[in-house]
Amino acid sequence: MTAFQRVVVLGSTGSIGESTLDVIARHPERLAVYALSAYSQMARLAEQARASRAAVVVVPDAAAREKFIAAWAGSQPLPEIRVGAQALADTAADAQCDSVMAAIVGAAGLPAALAAARSGKRVLLANKEALVAAGSLFMQAIRDNGAELLPIDSEHNAIFQCLPHGGRAGAPQRPAPGVRRLLLTASGGPFRGRDLEDLHEVTPAQACAHPNWSMGRKISVDSATMLNKGLEVIEAHWLFAMPPDRIEVVVHPQSVVHSMVEYDDGSVLAQLGQPDMRTPIAYGLGFPERLDSGVGPLDLTRLGRLDFEKPDLARFPCLALSFAALRAGQGACVTLNAANEVAVEAFLGGRLPYTWISRVIEASLEWQARQASVTLNSLDDVLALDAEARTFAGNLGLA
Ligand code: NAD
Ligand code: MG
Image (tube, rainbow, N blue to C red; front, top):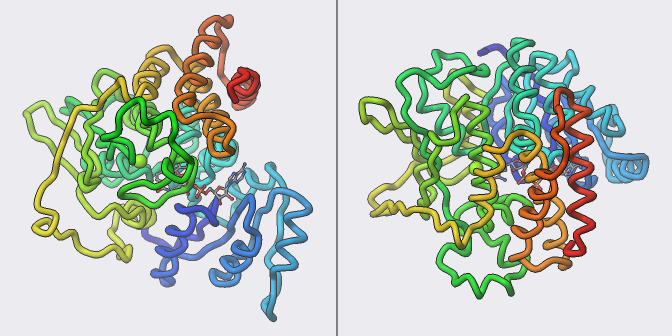
């Protein structure tokens, strides 16, 4: 796809959304914003819509709509304002757009990401929770509707770059030929070297202070617990049709090697770069061509060394829980994600100690395993289990 692209940015006021607008603005000859969406920060959304000349904005409710209008100053005509979750999915499927950046945080982004897949768009997928909750449905929707799927999560983008793809970005049904393993790198987050006992006292500000990446608060906490890497293992399973035992996590504190693919002949291909999400975003927008992303060169001699370690599963129980959920099946993955979203929100709100995040997830997975097996053949099935798991996790008395 090299023609002019009109892009919908879902979650435009977030960390990924801002980086996406930065890359789009560098390429007016081939990229334009069609629509933006945000859940809060209406003043920022108005600034973005003015600067990018978005035709449409999507806001959550009538109160947000009023705030958006109040924030709209100047002579430019107001964009069309659409309201509510259905409008989000409809905009992702809008005939006026070619590409959709799915950068809403959490399972809340699933319906719109799925709508983009079902309408055959180029889907730039940052919203990993959508794949964790509904990997099979989502990948099938990509296949059935001839959509393109470009992974934006830096690890998966790196793996995609290291795999043979022949210029096509689809939804494979089996592992790429000749591939032995996927090696997902993990920074280890801000608590890599901390004693287990110290972690109980950790504050949201400490958990959100990631050593290498600047990101939204939820994914920053996920990086600290390494549940983020667990979600990414599940994400890699779906994106690359790779069985769990052929996905390995390697701790790499510098976050320069974004991930690797090991082939049957012993070759290991890696993608390296500065830890800046504009690189994978530009790759997704430009594919199969390369675009200037604004990211500067990588100075390897200044860096000096690259380190690699095994992850410590005692310090990071969320990683083991994620592998267990992936092996247990889709119901467990939905539950893992939902329980984590509830627990992280409680932690960020000062209602749950850091070390209890993994306990909430573990108890929720045990609850799910005791339930009669569920069929998750539709978006409604997934959302129903997601809601039940949230209720369970919220009622644990922990949250
Ligand atoms: P963020 O919190 O900075 O931004 C989230 C965006 O989603 C905001 O625009 C917000 O208004 C919107 N939003 C929040 N709740 C919503 C809801 N219920 N309905 C509709 N919109 C809602 O998050 P982020 O760091 O940009 O991450 C976005 C997604 O990308 C996440 O799934 C994250 O895991 C993934 N991701 C992020 C990074 C990164 O570097 N930030 C890297 C890889 C993957
Ligand atoms: Mg990542």
